Picture (cartoon, rainbow, N blue to C red):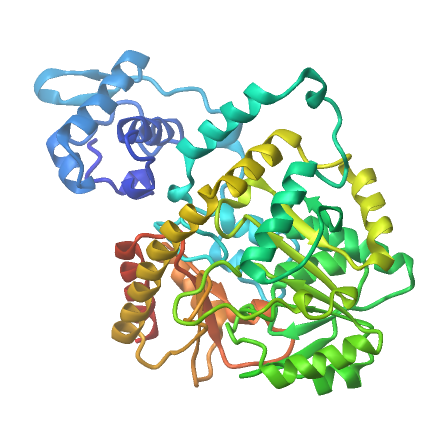
Length: 478
């Protein structure tokens, strides 16, 4: 029995980490032997043939085969080729259920773990929104800053920190948002949180304790943000979004005491809150309404200047949130909030009892990078790269999906496309995932019926992958 081609491996070698393709291939071969796709007695493909099929050098395949020989799983039999002689014991991971199917992920009502399921599902091309170019993380600058910080820390600095965050980072954030967002704030106004998600949860907890039972949200708006509010038992009445942003008249009529907004680059449509709407919103807030401003990707602007943050206009009624997730990496879990004085002590107390504060060392490293000018250099670098990838996506959409309407191209890390047609964008996203392309259906982020569409991230994928992924979507639409 002979294994023909690479079909038995199930995954494309493009999933392999750079520089470790032989390790990846050896691992996939072990899995294939363990689960019976390559039974004992079967012959592996010739190294030259498998290398050609996978589009790698023959040396990658030869080295992988040698690993299996050393493990005792295969043996060279001369003209008979390389033969499987023993199966490795199955691990708990191999016996565990595999990743969920596309049909399970894109069910009609997405569950609370839907984003975890989508992230854990392998795909050749990932066009999920909300992720920057992670290969651009400034590792050298981070390590250099970390050494500098460690050299200047005293023994006492390794103890418990301030639950509000390291003073150095709070000051650096105050300087940063003054330079980049026009917000005047003191270090004492800044609370460091484990990303905007935690900050939103802490604020929601405090608002619930004060008797607030609902926070209005834009429609469409982030499914993830709504899930965090629902976790705190808060209702999220939807307020219509049009080309000028949220409909403030509808917000007033809703009677909601608070609203969660993404005014600088509305998620997912990409519209900017217009000037007249801003004035209407300020009048609503001045009458007692609370604005929660998620400034999630304010740093990424390509074809227009940044608009002022709402917090810069009415600090007493605006809770402002930002993070490094969209311009450094989500894995750092570092964000910040500026909470209106009437809620500040309660939110700080909620943070204290949640985790006693973020880890101090990463805060100090980030503060050093922000105050040294390294973050401005990093942003200039990634903006150019993200802009090229955005342009590649727009070009590919023109070619392969000419009937798609593109929204939000002037800023951010994603595009939203909609179609003037009747079909299920859930089925479309499921079919794309079956073809190895991850996208998010627009309907995930809508509470009321809207035209079908997709939310497509371009920050984390090279231009070639973006073009290939959009081509797959185009073939599925035909």
